[in-house]
Image (cartoon, rainbow, N blue to C red; front, side, top):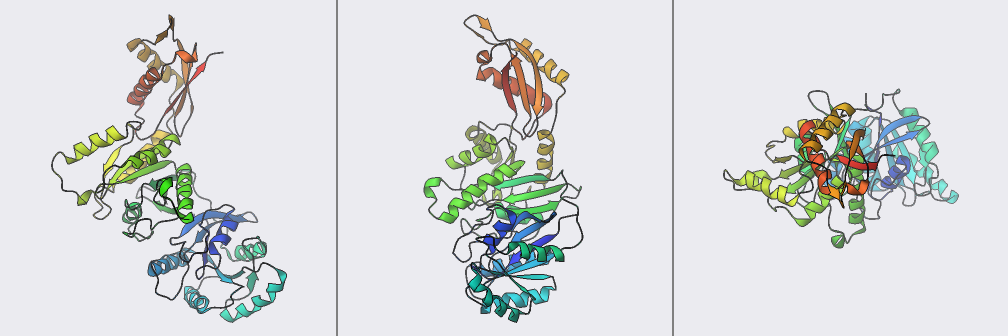
Length: 436
Protein backbone atom coordinates (compact mmCIF):
# COMPACT_ATOMS: atom_id res chain seq x y z
CA UNK A 1 0.00 0.00 0.00
CA UNK A 2 1.04 3.59 -0.60
CA UNK A 3 1.96 6.04 2.13
CA UNK A 4 -0.86 8.28 3.38
CA UNK A 5 -1.01 11.59 1.54
CA UNK A 6 -1.07 15.16 2.84
CA UNK A 7 -1.91 17.99 0.40
CA UNK A 8 -0.98 21.63 1.05
CA UNK A 9 -3.42 24.05 -0.58
CA UNK A 10 -4.34 27.73 -0.40
CA UNK A 11 -4.50 30.94 -2.35
CA UNK A 12 -1.37 32.33 -4.03
CA UNK A 13 1.53 33.73 -2.03
CA UNK A 14 0.60 32.56 1.47
CA UNK A 15 3.78 30.47 1.89
CA UNK A 16 2.58 27.01 0.88
CA UNK A 17 5.87 26.08 -0.77
CA UNK A 18 7.91 27.36 2.19
CA UNK A 19 5.84 25.20 4.54
CA UNK A 20 6.17 22.26 2.11
CA UNK A 21 9.97 22.63 2.09
CA UNK A 22 10.01 22.93 5.90
CA UNK A 23 8.08 19.68 6.34
CA UNK A 24 9.99 17.86 3.59
CA UNK A 25 13.29 18.97 5.15
CA UNK A 26 14.80 20.20 1.90
CA UNK A 27 14.28 22.85 -0.76
CA UNK A 28 12.07 21.07 -3.30
CA UNK A 29 9.38 23.59 -4.19
CA UNK A 30 10.37 26.93 -5.68
CA UNK A 31 9.89 29.76 -3.18
CA UNK A 32 9.50 33.25 -4.60
CA UNK A 33 7.19 36.20 -3.95
CA UNK A 34 5.56 35.88 -7.36
CA UNK A 35 2.04 34.55 -7.74
CA UNK A 36 1.77 31.36 -9.76
CA UNK A 37 5.37 30.16 -9.37
CA UNK A 38 4.15 26.72 -8.23
CA UNK A 39 1.99 25.42 -11.07
CA UNK A 40 2.02 21.63 -10.89
CA UNK A 41 1.65 19.28 -7.95
CA UNK A 42 5.03 18.69 -6.29
CA UNK A 43 5.58 15.43 -4.41
CA UNK A 44 7.92 14.59 -1.55
CA UNK A 45 8.04 12.31 1.49
CA UNK A 46 7.65 13.93 4.90
CA UNK A 47 7.73 12.50 8.39
CA UNK A 48 6.81 13.28 12.00
CA UNK A 49 6.79 11.14 15.15
CA UNK A 50 7.88 8.03 13.24
CA UNK A 51 5.06 8.44 10.72
CA UNK A 52 5.95 8.89 7.06
CA UNK A 53 3.59 10.36 4.49
CA UNK A 54 3.53 11.61 0.93
CA UNK A 55 3.41 15.39 0.74
CA UNK A 56 1.91 17.38 -2.15
CA UNK A 57 2.45 21.08 -2.82
CA UNK A 58 -0.01 22.79 -5.15
CA UNK A 59 -0.37 26.01 -7.08
CA UNK A 60 -2.25 28.91 -5.52
CA UNK A 61 -6.02 28.77 -6.09
CA UNK A 62 -7.94 31.97 -6.75
CA UNK A 63 -11.29 32.89 -8.29
CA UNK A 64 -9.79 35.28 -10.83
CA UNK A 65 -8.80 35.32 -14.48
CA UNK A 66 -5.04 34.72 -14.72
CA UNK A 67 -2.61 32.74 -16.92
CA UNK A 68 -2.78 29.00 -16.14
CA UNK A 69 -5.29 29.60 -13.31
CA UNK A 70 -7.82 27.07 -14.61
CA UNK A 71 -5.11 24.45 -14.99
CA UNK A 72 -3.68 25.26 -11.55
CA UNK A 73 -7.12 24.84 -9.98
CA UNK A 74 -7.54 21.55 -11.83
CA UNK A 75 -4.19 20.30 -10.51
CA UNK A 76 -5.08 21.39 -6.97
CA UNK A 77 -8.44 19.62 -7.18
CA UNK A 78 -6.66 16.39 -8.18
CA UNK A 79 -4.32 16.81 -5.21
CA UNK A 80 -7.30 17.30 -2.90
CA UNK A 81 -8.89 14.14 -4.29
CA UNK A 82 -5.65 12.18 -3.74
CA UNK A 83 -5.12 13.44 -0.17
CA UNK A 84 -6.01 11.76 3.10
CA UNK A 85 -5.48 15.02 4.99
CA UNK A 86 -5.49 18.59 3.62
CA UNK A 87 -3.53 21.50 5.10
CA UNK A 88 -5.12 24.85 4.17
CA UNK A 89 -2.54 27.64 4.42
CA UNK A 90 -3.67 31.23 5.00
CA UNK A 91 -1.72 34.38 5.85
CA UNK A 92 -1.87 35.85 9.36
CA UNK A 93 -0.52 39.14 8.06
CA UNK A 94 -3.40 39.76 5.67
CA UNK A 95 -6.33 38.16 7.46
CA UNK A 96 -9.22 36.40 5.72
CA UNK A 97 -9.56 37.25 2.03
CA UNK A 98 -12.18 36.43 -0.58
CA UNK A 99 -9.71 33.93 -2.06
CA UNK A 100 -9.37 32.16 1.32
CA UNK A 101 -13.16 31.82 1.49
CA UNK A 102 -13.22 30.54 -2.10
CA UNK A 103 -10.67 27.81 -1.27
CA UNK A 104 -12.53 26.94 1.95
CA UNK A 105 -15.73 26.34 -0.05
CA UNK A 106 -13.84 23.91 -2.31
CA UNK A 107 -12.61 22.04 0.80
CA UNK A 108 -16.11 21.83 2.29
CA UNK A 109 -17.15 19.82 -0.75
CA UNK A 110 -14.12 17.53 -0.51
CA UNK A 111 -15.29 16.08 2.82
CA UNK A 112 -11.70 15.38 3.90
CA UNK A 113 -9.98 16.23 7.21
CA UNK A 114 -8.69 19.82 6.94
CA UNK A 115 -5.99 21.34 9.17
CA UNK A 116 -5.93 25.16 9.08
CA UNK A 117 -2.41 26.64 9.14
CA UNK A 118 -2.19 30.40 9.71
CA UNK A 119 1.23 31.20 8.26
CA UNK A 120 3.49 34.24 8.66
CA UNK A 121 2.80 34.52 12.40
CA UNK A 122 6.42 35.44 13.01
CA UNK A 123 6.11 36.96 16.50
CA UNK A 124 3.91 36.47 19.62
CA UNK A 125 2.12 39.79 19.12
CA UNK A 126 0.49 38.44 15.96
CA UNK A 127 -1.11 35.41 17.63
CA UNK A 128 -4.26 37.33 18.52
CA UNK A 129 -5.08 37.65 14.80
CA UNK A 130 -5.30 33.87 14.49
CA UNK A 131 -8.74 33.68 16.09
CA UNK A 132 -10.30 35.59 13.20
CA UNK A 133 -9.81 32.47 11.06
CA UNK A 134 -12.43 30.52 13.03
CA UNK A 135 -14.81 32.33 10.68
CA UNK A 136 -13.75 29.97 7.88
CA UNK A 137 -15.52 27.14 9.71
CA UNK A 138 -12.61 24.70 9.43
CA UNK A 139 -11.86 24.15 13.10
CA UNK A 140 -8.92 25.28 15.19
CA UNK A 141 -6.39 27.49 13.40
CA UNK A 142 -2.70 26.65 14.03
CA UNK A 143 -0.33 29.64 14.02
CA UNK A 144 2.95 28.87 12.23
CA UNK A 145 5.93 30.62 10.75
CA UNK A 146 7.14 28.37 7.96
CA UNK A 147 10.20 30.59 7.46
CA UNK A 148 11.36 30.22 11.08
CA UNK A 149 9.80 26.82 11.78
CA UNK A 150 7.65 28.13 14.63
CA UNK A 151 4.50 26.15 15.38
CA UNK A 152 5.11 23.45 12.78
CA UNK A 153 5.37 20.78 15.46
CA UNK A 154 1.84 21.46 16.73
CA UNK A 155 0.61 21.58 13.14
CA UNK A 156 2.17 18.21 12.33
CA UNK A 157 0.76 16.72 15.54
CA UNK A 158 -2.68 17.64 14.22
CA UNK A 159 -1.89 16.23 10.78
CA UNK A 160 -0.65 12.92 12.22
CA UNK A 161 -3.78 12.58 14.35
CA UNK A 162 -5.94 12.66 11.21
CA UNK A 163 -3.88 10.23 9.11
CA UNK A 164 -5.30 6.77 8.42
CA UNK A 165 -3.74 3.73 10.06
CA UNK A 166 -0.17 2.80 9.27
CA UNK A 167 0.43 2.14 5.56
CA UNK A 168 3.18 0.06 4.09
CA UNK A 169 6.09 1.97 2.68
CA UNK A 170 6.97 2.20 -0.96
CA UNK A 171 8.21 -1.05 -2.47
CA UNK A 172 11.96 -1.32 -2.94
CA UNK A 173 11.70 -2.44 -6.59
CA UNK A 174 10.20 0.85 -7.81
CA UNK A 175 12.02 2.10 -10.93
CA UNK A 176 12.60 5.86 -10.95
CA UNK A 177 13.12 7.63 -14.23
CA UNK A 178 13.18 11.26 -15.31
CA UNK A 179 12.55 13.14 -18.53
CA UNK A 180 15.12 15.78 -19.39
CA UNK A 181 15.63 18.06 -22.35
CA UNK A 182 15.45 21.62 -23.55
CA UNK A 183 12.24 23.59 -22.92
CA UNK A 184 9.18 22.72 -24.99
CA UNK A 185 10.34 19.36 -26.32
CA UNK A 186 7.16 17.71 -25.00
CA UNK A 187 8.24 16.04 -21.76
CA UNK A 188 5.00 16.79 -19.91
CA UNK A 189 2.93 15.71 -22.91
CA UNK A 190 4.73 12.35 -22.94
CA UNK A 191 3.87 11.84 -19.26
CA UNK A 192 0.23 12.77 -19.86
CA UNK A 193 0.02 10.40 -22.82
CA UNK A 194 1.59 7.54 -20.86
CA UNK A 195 -0.74 8.04 -17.93
CA UNK A 196 -3.84 8.84 -19.91
CA UNK A 197 -4.63 11.82 -17.70
CA UNK A 198 -3.62 15.47 -17.44
CA UNK A 199 -1.22 14.85 -14.56
CA UNK A 200 1.20 17.64 -15.56
CA UNK A 201 0.25 20.96 -17.14
CA UNK A 202 1.22 20.81 -20.83
CA UNK A 203 1.34 24.04 -22.81
CA UNK A 204 2.98 25.26 -26.03
CA UNK A 205 4.52 28.07 -23.98
CA UNK A 206 8.22 27.34 -23.51
CA UNK A 207 9.14 26.63 -19.88
CA UNK A 208 5.66 25.83 -18.52
CA UNK A 209 6.98 23.13 -16.17
CA UNK A 210 9.16 24.84 -13.60
CA UNK A 211 9.21 22.21 -10.88
CA UNK A 212 10.22 18.57 -10.98
CA UNK A 213 7.06 16.51 -10.52
CA UNK A 214 7.07 12.93 -9.19
CA UNK A 215 4.33 10.78 -10.71
CA UNK A 216 3.91 7.16 -9.56
CA UNK A 217 2.21 4.57 -11.77
CA UNK A 218 2.06 0.80 -12.25
CA UNK A 219 2.10 -1.05 -15.56
CA UNK A 220 -0.13 -4.00 -16.50
CA UNK A 221 2.51 -6.47 -15.25
CA UNK A 222 2.54 -4.88 -11.80
CA UNK A 223 5.90 -3.12 -12.12
CA UNK A 224 5.90 0.15 -10.18
CA UNK A 225 7.50 3.29 -11.56
CA UNK A 226 8.00 6.89 -10.50
CA UNK A 227 8.28 9.41 -13.32
CA UNK A 228 10.16 12.62 -12.57
CA UNK A 229 9.23 15.39 -15.01
CA UNK A 230 11.81 18.17 -14.91
CA UNK A 231 11.79 21.79 -15.95
CA UNK A 232 13.25 22.47 -19.40
CA UNK A 233 16.99 23.02 -19.06
CA UNK A 234 18.60 26.05 -20.66
CA UNK A 235 22.15 27.25 -21.12
CA UNK A 236 23.31 29.08 -18.02
CA UNK A 237 23.92 32.22 -20.06
CA UNK A 238 20.25 32.30 -21.00
CA UNK A 239 18.93 31.81 -17.49
CA UNK A 240 17.88 35.26 -16.37
CA UNK A 241 15.14 34.62 -13.82
CA UNK A 242 15.97 33.37 -10.36
CA UNK A 243 13.10 30.92 -10.83
CA UNK A 244 14.75 29.43 -13.93
CA UNK A 245 18.04 28.99 -12.09
CA UNK A 246 16.28 26.89 -9.47
CA UNK A 247 14.69 24.86 -12.27
CA UNK A 248 18.09 23.95 -13.74
CA UNK A 249 19.37 22.98 -10.30
CA UNK A 250 16.27 20.86 -9.74
CA UNK A 251 16.70 19.13 -13.09
CA UNK A 252 20.22 18.12 -12.08
CA UNK A 253 18.88 16.78 -8.78
CA UNK A 254 16.15 14.89 -10.65
CA UNK A 255 18.84 13.17 -12.72
CA UNK A 256 20.65 12.28 -9.52
CA UNK A 257 17.47 10.78 -8.03
CA UNK A 258 16.69 8.75 -11.16
CA UNK A 259 17.73 5.27 -12.14
CA UNK A 260 17.05 5.92 -15.83
CA UNK A 261 16.88 9.15 -17.81
CA UNK A 262 14.84 9.77 -20.96
CA UNK A 263 16.63 12.38 -23.08
CA UNK A 264 13.83 14.04 -25.09
CA UNK A 265 14.61 15.71 -28.43
CA UNK A 266 12.20 17.80 -30.48
CA UNK A 267 12.05 16.26 -33.98
CA UNK A 268 10.85 19.55 -35.45
CA UNK A 269 13.89 21.44 -34.19
CA UNK A 270 16.47 18.72 -34.71
CA UNK A 271 19.52 18.00 -32.59
CA UNK A 272 21.04 21.02 -30.90
CA UNK A 273 24.49 21.36 -29.39
CA UNK A 274 23.04 21.68 -25.93
CA UNK A 275 21.14 18.39 -26.31
CA UNK A 276 24.52 16.70 -26.16
CA UNK A 277 25.42 18.62 -23.02
CA UNK A 278 22.17 17.64 -21.31
CA UNK A 279 22.58 13.95 -22.13
CA UNK A 280 26.15 14.22 -20.87
CA UNK A 281 24.85 15.09 -17.41
CA UNK A 282 23.02 11.76 -17.25
CA UNK A 283 25.95 9.81 -18.71
CA UNK A 284 28.41 11.32 -16.23
CA UNK A 285 26.05 10.46 -13.39
CA UNK A 286 26.08 6.80 -14.47
CA UNK A 287 22.36 6.66 -15.20
CA UNK A 288 20.55 4.45 -17.69
CA UNK A 289 19.70 6.42 -20.80
CA UNK A 290 17.12 6.38 -23.60
CA UNK A 291 17.08 8.92 -26.45
CA UNK A 292 13.45 9.82 -27.16
CA UNK A 293 12.73 11.75 -30.36
CA UNK A 294 9.32 13.36 -29.79
CA UNK A 295 6.88 15.03 -32.23
CA UNK A 296 7.78 12.41 -34.85
CA UNK A 297 4.29 12.76 -36.34
CA UNK A 298 5.02 16.32 -37.46
CA UNK A 299 7.83 15.42 -39.87
CA UNK A 300 7.44 14.66 -43.54
CA UNK A 301 9.12 11.28 -43.86
CA UNK A 302 10.24 8.76 -46.43
CA UNK A 303 11.80 5.30 -46.16
CA UNK A 304 15.18 6.76 -45.22
CA UNK A 305 14.19 9.39 -42.63
CA UNK A 306 14.46 7.20 -39.54
CA UNK A 307 17.78 5.67 -40.59
CA UNK A 308 19.19 9.13 -41.30
CA UNK A 309 18.08 10.33 -37.86
CA UNK A 310 19.70 7.29 -36.22
CA UNK A 311 22.97 7.99 -38.03
CA UNK A 312 22.86 11.66 -37.02
CA UNK A 313 22.13 10.80 -33.39
CA UNK A 314 24.97 8.28 -33.23
CA UNK A 315 27.27 10.85 -34.81
CA UNK A 316 26.31 13.59 -32.34
CA UNK A 317 26.10 11.35 -29.27
CA UNK A 318 29.20 9.23 -29.81
CA UNK A 319 29.85 8.94 -26.07
CA UNK A 320 26.55 7.08 -25.45
CA UNK A 321 26.42 4.35 -28.12
CA UNK A 322 24.66 2.09 -25.60
CA UNK A 323 21.55 4.32 -25.43
CA UNK A 324 18.58 2.97 -27.44
CA UNK A 325 16.69 5.39 -29.68
CA UNK A 326 12.90 5.51 -29.93
CA UNK A 327 10.83 7.81 -32.17
CA UNK A 328 7.53 8.78 -30.55
CA UNK A 329 4.62 11.15 -30.71
CA UNK A 330 3.00 12.25 -27.49
CA UNK A 331 0.07 13.56 -29.53
CA UNK A 332 -0.75 10.31 -31.38
CA UNK A 333 0.88 8.02 -28.75
CA UNK A 334 2.98 6.45 -31.51
CA UNK A 335 5.48 3.95 -30.00
CA UNK A 336 4.92 5.26 -26.47
CA UNK A 337 4.00 1.73 -25.41
CA UNK A 338 7.64 0.75 -25.94
CA UNK A 339 8.95 3.05 -23.21
CA UNK A 340 7.88 1.13 -20.06
CA UNK A 341 9.25 -2.18 -21.40
CA UNK A 342 12.46 -0.48 -22.48
CA UNK A 343 12.84 1.14 -19.06
CA UNK A 344 12.24 -2.21 -17.34
CA UNK A 345 14.86 -3.93 -19.52
CA UNK A 346 17.44 -1.22 -18.80
CA UNK A 347 16.73 -1.48 -15.07
CA UNK A 348 17.45 -5.21 -15.23
CA UNK A 349 20.70 -4.49 -17.10
CA UNK A 350 21.71 -1.90 -14.50
CA UNK A 351 21.35 -4.48 -11.74
CA UNK A 352 22.97 -7.35 -13.65
CA UNK A 353 25.88 -9.14 -11.97
CA UNK A 354 28.44 -11.22 -13.84
CA UNK A 355 30.11 -14.16 -12.12
CA UNK A 356 33.85 -13.60 -11.71
CA UNK A 357 34.75 -16.86 -13.45
CA UNK A 358 32.67 -16.00 -16.52
CA UNK A 359 34.01 -12.43 -16.57
CA UNK A 360 37.63 -13.56 -16.38
CA UNK A 361 37.15 -16.12 -19.16
CA UNK A 362 35.86 -13.29 -21.35
CA UNK A 363 38.75 -10.96 -20.45
CA UNK A 364 41.36 -13.64 -21.21
CA UNK A 365 39.68 -14.51 -24.53
CA UNK A 366 39.64 -10.81 -25.43
CA UNK A 367 43.35 -10.48 -24.59
CA UNK A 368 44.11 -13.50 -26.79
CA UNK A 369 42.11 -11.93 -29.63
CA UNK A 370 43.70 -8.50 -29.22
CA UNK A 371 47.02 -8.64 -27.28
CA UNK A 372 47.52 -6.09 -24.52
CA UNK A 373 49.49 -2.93 -25.37
CA UNK A 374 53.16 -2.33 -24.63
CA UNK A 375 55.06 0.82 -23.68
CA UNK A 376 58.83 1.12 -23.82
CA UNK A 377 59.17 -2.63 -24.09
CA UNK A 378 56.92 -3.33 -21.12
CA UNK A 379 53.65 -5.17 -21.75
CA UNK A 380 50.40 -4.74 -19.85
CA UNK A 381 49.49 -7.86 -17.90
CA UNK A 382 45.89 -8.48 -16.85
CA UNK A 383 45.70 -10.74 -13.80
CA UNK A 384 41.98 -10.88 -13.12
CA UNK A 385 38.77 -8.84 -13.08
CA UNK A 386 35.81 -8.57 -10.74
CA UNK A 387 32.47 -6.79 -10.71
CA UNK A 388 32.26 -4.56 -7.65
CA UNK A 389 29.00 -2.62 -8.08
CA UNK A 390 25.73 -2.19 -9.97
CA UNK A 391 23.82 0.92 -11.08
CA UNK A 392 25.95 1.28 -13.12
CA UNK A 393 27.71 -2.08 -13.44
CA UNK A 394 31.29 -1.43 -12.36
CA UNK A 395 34.28 -3.69 -12.94
CA UNK A 396 37.80 -3.55 -11.54
CA UNK A 397 40.62 -4.96 -13.67
CA UNK A 398 43.81 -5.79 -11.77
CA UNK A 399 47.02 -5.30 -13.77
CA UNK A 400 50.77 -5.07 -13.32
CA UNK A 401 50.99 -1.31 -14.09
CA UNK A 402 47.98 1.01 -14.35
CA UNK A 403 49.68 3.45 -16.73
CA UNK A 404 50.08 0.69 -19.33
CA UNK A 405 46.28 0.44 -19.73
CA UNK A 406 45.61 2.73 -22.70
CA UNK A 407 42.09 4.21 -22.91
CA UNK A 408 41.60 2.61 -26.33
CA UNK A 409 42.26 -0.86 -24.92
CA UNK A 410 39.92 -0.16 -22.02
CA UNK A 411 37.26 0.77 -24.56
CA UNK A 412 37.95 -2.48 -26.43
CA UNK A 413 37.38 -4.46 -23.23
CA UNK A 414 34.19 -2.51 -22.53
CA UNK A 415 32.88 -3.35 -26.00
CA UNK A 416 33.68 -7.03 -25.45
CA UNK A 417 31.80 -7.03 -22.14
CA UNK A 418 28.84 -5.25 -23.71
CA UNK A 419 28.70 -7.66 -26.64
CA UNK A 420 28.82 -10.69 -24.36
CA UNK A 421 26.43 -9.57 -21.62
CA UNK A 422 24.07 -7.13 -23.38
CA UNK A 423 24.26 -4.06 -21.16
CA UNK A 424 21.81 -2.17 -23.34
CA UNK A 425 20.85 1.27 -22.10
CA UNK A 426 23.28 1.52 -19.20
CA UNK A 427 26.81 2.84 -18.95
CA UNK A 428 29.37 0.48 -17.48
CA UNK A 429 32.54 1.50 -15.69
CA UNK A 430 35.91 -0.19 -15.99
CA UNK A 431 38.49 0.73 -13.35
CA UNK A 432 42.14 -0.27 -13.49
CA UNK A 433 44.01 -1.15 -10.30
CA UNK A 434 47.56 -2.33 -9.72
CA UNK A 435 47.67 -5.72 -8.04
CA UNK A 436 49.29 -5.38 -4.65
